[in-house]
Image 1 (cartoon, rainbow, N blue to C red):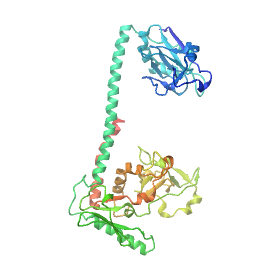
Image 2: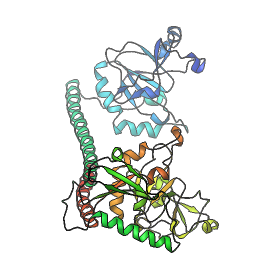
Image 3: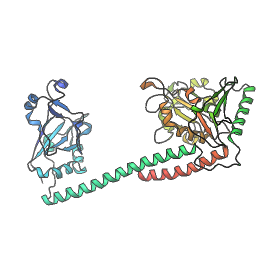
Length: 443
């Protein structure tokens, strides 16, 4: 049946933005109108004089407001009974029913797919396409008896209440799952996730193997000696000391973040790596090539590594990239500049690169590549557990913060025996597999 209503749209105050005040009569715009009510946090105001000049667009209690232009077209708000007074601009239309008892039902009909589809299909114009009051007045709305409206309103509100409740419970469960993953990682890097095995070769021997191998590579001229090389040990007084290449010894108790099992050892991140910790180079891009560039956006927030977001490198620059600059299976990638992504940790695998093209990091990415005696995925788990701390270590202005390679090099890493590293990884894989299965069911 056709519904008799009073329909009218507002207008823009003369004088542009200067006509708005910080006090006076509320002036409602499309950004204030939402399906669940008005958002008046950023409402504008006009003078009483201007409000009287625009008397045809004065909002009253029990009205319905509908956005009729732009990206928010179709959003519709009920004006509560205790509302005082307001005015609207030309992007908002006032629907005032002759029978105000119908307003709850009509509001639900307007925000339903039945009317929303008509609104979108019958708007005219491009860009800020719009719907005229004349077109809106021709819409047909089915009107049930008043008692049935009240029953429908009650039932619908009951359903919406349960939907909102389930939605909040879902959000709470998602948050709990994320907190569980963080808790698991934190226990893992403290030696509290799996039992220690006294038969495991201790981490002190593992680190000695790494130092011997690096010494061999230095003698062969393949790498340079680190003038700030150091070893960390726990003395008989239960304090931690760091011994440097020049023979000096320094107590570092204040740097040690937590206690670790006796079979574990502390070391600096730079001592865990087979490649110097540094950022990639500033690339020159081309539309097509067979060499890719890994950028910050490839290390996504929720979906792991996405090589489809990589750009193509100008292959005339290939002579600037030695072999060890190309990314390898198991490389840990860290976003190292910019607000929002700085400190984000990712784990690159060859299976991420479906085309199999060589790939290099750009200048906003730092690569961490583990030594043979340290399981690369354990090192990734440690970095991931510390992602929150990495995000806080940026230096510089707000929009240009940098996570410097030197900052990363000096991070203290707890190293378990290699056999225990593998047990940690196996258990975390199992736990995270179950968590991911639950997350998929919630999505």
